[in-house]
Length: 638
Figure: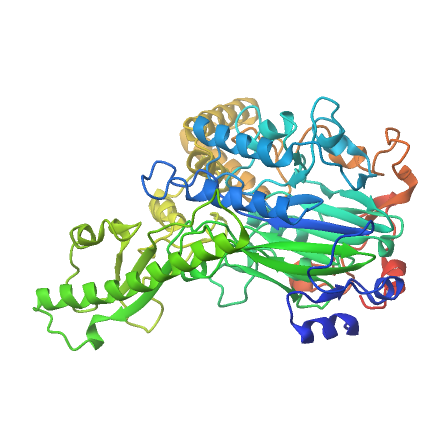
């Protein structure tokens, strides 16, 4: 496949303030912008991009309880200082699916202070606004004065659920504080519609896709159940997509191929992809594997796990878009609490296995070194905040410290007793030490191989627990072998468990079991011709297996159960028919006519392994049209 030379030149420059042309055609259409401090003009969009703020994370902790809220306020301050046209949030605004009243109040207070005001909005949304719950963007509400609009999608922590099928983002939207988009109502026909924006001569098409369980979305791409609607001439628009999913990291990434989204799955007409959910900060644009678009992964603004990826400096991205070219400027977050990590092996320390005091002293010396380094980093971050002119925010004074100790052949000491001596010098005294053993086969510490049946699909967590045990391993332990399920289909049980754990729905599992048993009884009584108990048992097992296969194949059964208020096969009214042509019959005068929109297929050269048959061709239906002409006009290459 031919690669676009203009993009290769940008990546060779590898400078955060470089200006990247979207395509060869768009680069020729507009001049390159100057340095990163250039003032905005009437043709330049300035977007502040943040993801995974996790407001409310461990809010009851006396030391770290306000960390997420403080970092989120810094994000809003940066948007105000940089005079961003709008903020784009990539999901997981809140850490809990049902944030506490204090968390919700504090977040809404910050949004009101920083996003509302007498300032002017310098761009227009020219697409049909019925994709928003209130039928319009918030700055067009005559009852509020919005000076910095915020557009957001939901993540896996703050996704819709419950009987109302609403999320915390819906509460912020009805208060005219944010513009919530990217929600898929029909998971059997996922249609991604753009928010079209215009500022002067620059045009942006913003595609949002809120979090969908990774295995399910992966399957939807494979089964050609994801469609993109595009303007008639996508080459005249700068196409941005924001999503919140596991990102494929190759065979060494630790995530099964089916439990993540591959870059090759995304359509080639895109220019820039904003990837949420991944907490590692990779804020500088990286060219996709196929060379069709750039990827920015801002990462989280608070460390929610003691992992190596969380220990790097956190950033947000300020992206300027002008006439088809963009520039990404990383901005560091100085209020984030620094995380210092180190790995040591007691077997290589020369200590005797019986020398408990010597082991204690050696570990204490390592922790002392990390604390000294962390304290210096805290002071540096406070100085950087002062230089920026932020007086209301303070950098943390206590660092996070984690010492990973490989102790094969040694007894572990009490981590709580050990941490008490540092209780006033670190923010996590109870989590200072992590003891682990090296696998005998040379594998990673704590890793285990568990064979999972083909008909079982349990959602993988993006992060493994500190002890190396994953929740899906625990679940599978109890439904494997002789204890296998004969009435309840495992994929639906997985949904119920996810609702119980992540969405704090205490009755999710009970409701699922009750509904499954009632549905099975109804079917057996209605259709059964069995004459004895064994035949009835076989019929029940056959029905459960049929439901299981239909769910894993993505076809959906008419009487299958979906806890948490969601439906795989129904949605809110047959999405496909209502989505042909953006704004058909209801578009405002400034909106493109319905005929100006089309449904964009995925790249025809897509991998057969990923797309089982060669990609998205034909997904647009009778009204869809090929994007080959648009790609050809943009300088090449499907």
